[in-house]
Length: 318
Image (cartoon, rainbow, N blue to C red; front, side, top):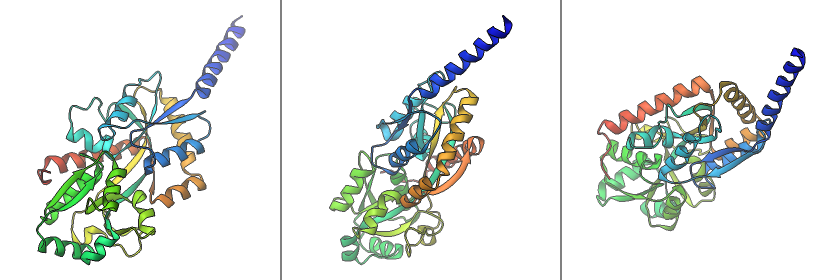
């Protein structure tokens, strides 16, 4: 009888695990479809084995805060995945203490996918008209023409917004911030001529740069990047001008640790597949291999860095 009971318990546990494995898992992307985070999430959902069906859900709003809050509220019994980023976990919480989630307590960091520098871009025709090829050319033009140039961003609290504010603080040149409801309409404004500049992520910039529509002035990275040969680091001419987007996978806090470990293993294995790595490389993602505790420390460091930057008073008001 005891043996039969034990066998029945094992069968029940196995059945529960199989039911959970076959259940659809939701991966929330808190940004609009079509961007690098969305594309990475969808490719990763296709490449990940052993977790059943992964449904990618775009939940936009509040600069990423709406989607992040949705995952935070899911609870440990029905956890979700979040493609979190520097905005959701380092910048927004510093700008808005009233966010309905705590970036450090309400999530379990699983895997850091990678980082992407931002690129200071202009429409190619405008750069040619103003004879701007380098950061030095831009600074001289802005010093001579004191009318503030218009820089577009994906909205208040986005990396592009903070990059513009940091650039303005370090160079003491005037800029006019034009916030949009996402990076894609902001980029459209640059391409159409209703904005002069933008600090956009490398993944979004690359196709337009390669097609000749955009001029890349410099990257917000400590050194140049291979995808933009000949484009210098802004840090060389504007010391301290380094800032990047990063993004990775988080689970809802309260998830059982064995399940978190299994999700981490499956996702990390998918990220190591050659096809997945080539896909990320083509978008300009600088791959990183940080999991669980290492990723958690990384998030804490970024949260602290942006907190110090925002609270230091170094960033001018819009």
